[in-house]
Length: 76
Image (cartoon, rainbow, N blue to C red; front, top):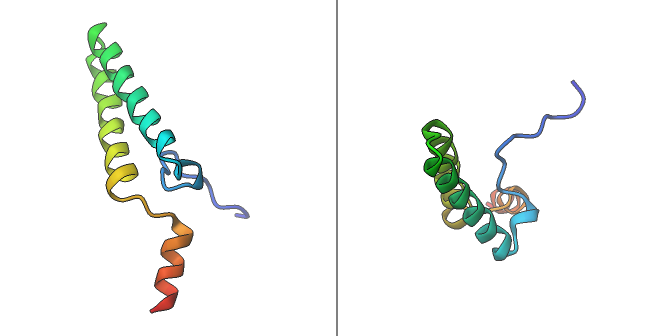
């Protein structure tokens, strides 16, 4: 009951502020999707592809740190 648990796919983190880290993550996920697909592991390829698409959306179209969002809400 003490500490809140971390979310598994929490991409809105200060670690991802530099753009190169976001690009690197998306490239690695895309590469791994191709590896899984080329070896015939369609389920894993779909899973990695889905995580990659989600990562692209969060990291490039909807990237706002939680602290900044909380600060913006408190101003209004």
